[in-house]
Amino acid sequence: MKLLEGKNALITGASKGIGRSIALKYAENGANVAFTYLSSVEKGEALVAELEAFGVKAKGYRSDASDFDAAQQLITDMVSEFGSLDILINNAGITRDNLLMRMTEEHWDEIMNINLKSCFNTVKASSRTMMKQRAGSIINMSSVVGVKGNPGQANYAASKAGIIGFSKSIALELGSRNIRCNAIAPGFIETEMTDVLDEKTVQSWRDAIPLKRGGQPEDVADACVFLGSDMSTYITGQVIQVDGGMLT
Image 1 (tube, rainbow, N blue to C red):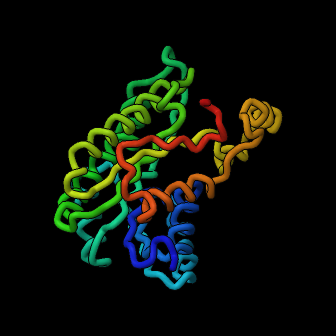
Image 2: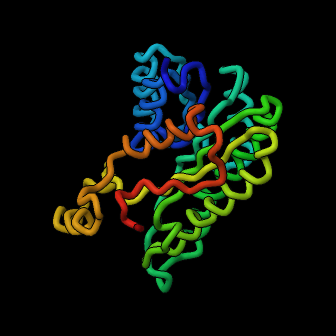
């Protein structure tokens, strides 16, 4: 039997990168997948066909999770379409890197809205459904930067540290209803975003990691499969670092 057979999952920001890998791994493991995208319309539409090829139900929603009302509507529509919401994965996120001295208020607010407020919006909107079901797994995407900080990323680090505190609090609040909430903190993951970087810089990062390589989106997706499956039913309130030992 597949690890996520018959489960209905919602993944935010899944048209590319880590989110796309999570969606594909979930479909491969038998989950029906709903996902959101914003700007990448063609990629979103193409992903539906890829997911359906695994014999599962799939649907993409063009929705902004950082908009409170839109998030509420998204959860309502998804539950109406799929019948339940078993796994929620908050993956949508952006960076607006700069040193504090040069960081604008707009870049601070934008990061907080898209990275952190979106988690509040979707978790709040889905909690009623999960409480009725007396079951659910919530997975929020943080970062090693949220654990240790990083110069030039004060806004991003603050948003990702906020996700950790938020996830631990939700785990405490909803645990009695059999709803689990965990965070994943990826390290240096090689995606489209890192492809544009100088190879020398990338190699120096790889050399500093105990496993001597960057992570792949699939490494993060595998951790999501574990936390969404019944193999992790006694794990909640945790931060799982998928970082090749970077913060060891």
